[in-house]
Image (tube, rainbow, N blue to C red; front, side, top):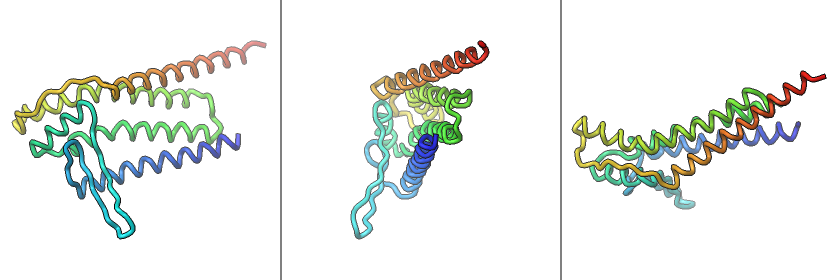
Length: 190
């Protein structure tokens, strides 16, 4: 049990580090950026070496980011914020899950809820990643901000990955639930 507690503490630290790094990257890019074709980047020269921070988009989001930048609209502001949201949900649920593991709760309803929440986040993100570009262009056109932006509908390998990952995580949560039910039934049998 001490090993599980130690590993859980390390994973929680890693989750906090990754979330902080992602947030820091976004803040740096929001404050000092040079826009690329499909994203934003910032470069730093500190005398010891050259560093670069970048956010770029792929799939339908890439094409929309290019169109946004050509229309003098911020792809980081309009796409980057929305793209970061599911990551922070996943970081939160992973932190909660490994906190439960650290306390010795391995198979419980709370663990199953955390795993299901991660799966749900991935499945919801699938729909957001497919339909948000269309909704964004529609809103920008209705507000007369830009009538040149193309409507883009695309399902690519990223979306398929979200679908498969979300479904696999849901099945794992279901198996955990079944194992917990079997354990409860066995405890009732004398």
